[in-house]
Image (cartoon, rainbow, N blue to C red; front, side, top):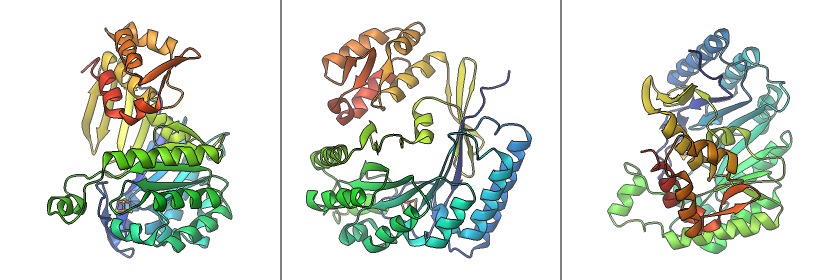
Length: 371
Ligand code: SF4
């Protein structure tokens, strides 16, 4: 049986100039001149061409090159990858979103001009903070002035510029975080993602916390920072369309939204996930191995969970459709309403601020409908 066509394409570049202290992404520090990167990019190019030949890229509506640090691999390799994409799918398709992630230390004016000319139309810059002391704690490879320069360079070509900011970092005051948010606003970005620091096993931060060298992030501080970000960004004309994402009108990320709405996507590269939907089953595959094999009930529960990550929540019709396959859906929403985690408005169940704050409980309650 043919699967539903892929709508989103993700390409993973697992290389960085150095490893940040908190990072648990699938990436490694590899010198820019390494032959390992050449070989990897060649494989990606061949995969892109192969999928195109099989007709798998015909319905792609968003492309995202992420990592790692895509800008770290340099313009020559990016050119061959972008060229392969440009002959494999229609980059001029109306509304197609094409994002590339970049880090300030490896994004320069030349790269901005070249990737834009080759079809990228959205750039997402890993800034994290505009405070040098905080950047040093995080172990980032850039400083605040380089971050600012990278955004200014990106703005020379790109209308759609996103930055990532982190909060709840040990030693980061509310004031420092507020200054970073204000700086992003002042520089005229159109999209901001705000993430609280989490300590993941096997990271340097994890060992430092265990050894008493680093304070554990404080939940209340993180919640205060998230609130502060919301106040400042909403005042500046952004809307919080997803738990961690803010956009100026019309600049919501299509690619990220496809992950949150259960749209089939194709991942190319090491540790990139592919999600296929085949009638009553949904499967996630990574490095050739199935990481998730969901039946109809689990798919419905997952879509409800993904739906409440987004501000618009889930429609009554969507809930009724889920309830036709899964027991207890209406009861779960009643309970979540009672807890103040969702509200019913305009024919939709929408998450509240409290619901987002207690995200694990909110999402967990819905996933538990079909364990
Ligand atoms: S730049 Fe990003 S992906 Fe690379 S090590 Fe740092 S946090 Fe991880």
